[in-house]
Amino acid sequence: MVGAFSARGAAPEAVRRMVEETVRDEPSTHLQAPPAHVRQPSLQVRFFGHFEMLCDGNAMHLGRNGKALTILKYLLANRRRPVSQDHLMGWLWPESNLKKARWSLNSAIHGLRKLLGGCSSALSTNYVTLEDGYYHLSGAVRIWTDVDELDERYEKGRRLEREGRMPAAAAEYEKAVELYRGDYLIEDLYDDWTMVERERLSNAYMDMLGRLAVHYMESGQYQESIRGCYRVLEKDRCHEDSYRLLMRCYARLGLRGRALHQYRMCKQILGQEYGTSPSPETRSLYTSLLRDQSA
Image 1 (cartoon, rainbow, N blue to C red):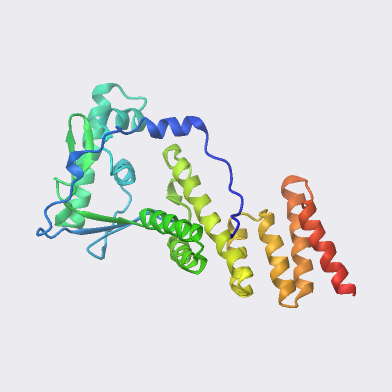
Image 2 (cartoon, rainbow, N blue to C red; image 1 turned 180 degrees about the horizontal axis):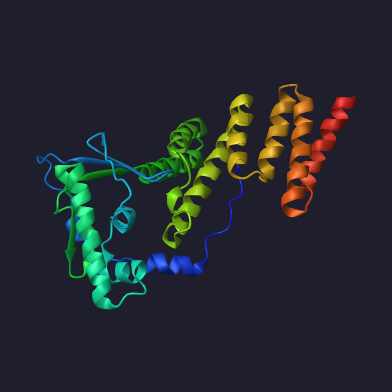
């Protein structure tokens, strides 16, 4: 059984509550797909790294559209459930009175519809609609997102792993981690509404990298395991499990000098960042490598 690397803590509860209050529990009937014989335009949405959209394979030039672009991202991220008009007004224009906030929202939605219509006729005024105080996106456009793809492959990989089919699980994990071009909506790093999802997806990414690294080491693919460990350390330079795995991989490749160097790096970085030393498990591995080297 391949062990998972440890994940970081969850986002603050207050942020979770804000996200939960954003949408209604009941999905909108307007999200139903059209009949099979009707050709649906295809929309690709990439949330990882910098936000990108493609319609029928053509890049959409979204430019800098302020609140309109923020609303677009938010509606797409919550597209399975309609979003409250009141919530958008209170969130985006907290200092305005109701009349001014409503005018500002209507103006932003108009700008959003104009932006989308200019990118593709499929995304005309009917794509973003308002009914009973809630916005929703039309089901007439098929949507693929990198987040959905990663989630599906992660879930499938975990299921295959539980069934003891680790090579097949690893193939799913590899496809999933390649989707991760950067943290979720990196340009909106400090927006509260993105925090919970960013943390969740970052943890999933790190977990898959860890599972892959352990799998490759156990199957003798040491260079692949090393590559995975360094990808983990790119995101978390204090990830002690990765240093330990690197030590083992380098040792099995006969590169004990590099293995020992990983311990020294781990010790230095943990001391700088947290004022702590490596764990007893890591120190024990280091001592074992030293003993083998002197034998």
